[in-house]
Length: 463
Image (cartoon, rainbow, N blue to C red; front, side, top):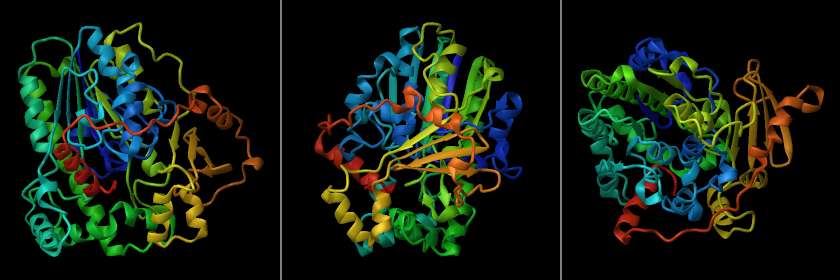
């Protein structure tokens, strides 16, 4: 058998048909669910890419790995941590059991430079070239960004990733193979190519300009921590283009499934389509995927079909290694009974605490008041049973009734409710385990490569 694990980076569950989106939003994903199942209630372990993927491939929670934030704030800082996880790193475990392991990633955070090639026989990083043309400072460069976005002739790497993956499928030898793919079309700035865009050139140009204004790390942090001031029409354009990006990825998936079928491998391949986290578009006064563990960020899709799909009963992305290994027949894997009984997510703020001069400068630059500054330093931990959610914000507990308060805006008093099971989950050894935050590691690449990756991080709103 084979396993194809596809991550639609930043795709929230309700953007896909099996989870409430309108018919036609994602027919290929819906077909995967019809042929197998769409697992309900699966949650990410974090609100952003690096810690979520670390859990997805290691089976541990972010704090236990020391990867709630990027070591040194760089995409390459995770390399020594991941290399030290070989004994519980899913592709490495499968490779040791005779599998071929191949990965394709369009995400700067999931790159060979950061150690994500650990355990993979082949790891292909896709550079769409968009960052070389768009988003650089200067009036001329800003104009170039808008013009390119209006023309919409390029994507964020999905087309090239599909070509690479289809070549690998065509060359499949019959050896059990694990394919892993990360696609970032759903990530801001939500600019799919014109044949999938839901807006005309003027609308695309406005979306591009608004991305520069509202979707940088500074802008997102300011609105999430303080006053939300993104105009409603800008949010509507973002949501429209986001849905179009989801549709583009769904078409991508259909092409890959056809390639597997043509090769005679579809029926013997466990196909998994999921996400690492979701996205906010103003709900609860939040934007993008930062400073929160709300359900729009942590509840993720998990549609699967093929061998073993009927037995999928995951609650957390940290259970992916155990699920895949069980289906693959790897009986001596290291992921048995190691997680709490309900999904748990963790977020630690960036920086080294309240005295970190970078954080102090950022708070001043963003114009944050005292209350917003306090929120900057509060770690978050959440546990949910699907109906209720217990959030520990700093040292305070907040309880939410998700049916009555889906935006998590009206916290209940935990002392007035029975939250023993949720507290027990938060006290689980896998949750309380805390690895030292790793120091920044030197980049194992030339300065030009590091500079290119850091430019990508800026365009994705991470620097």
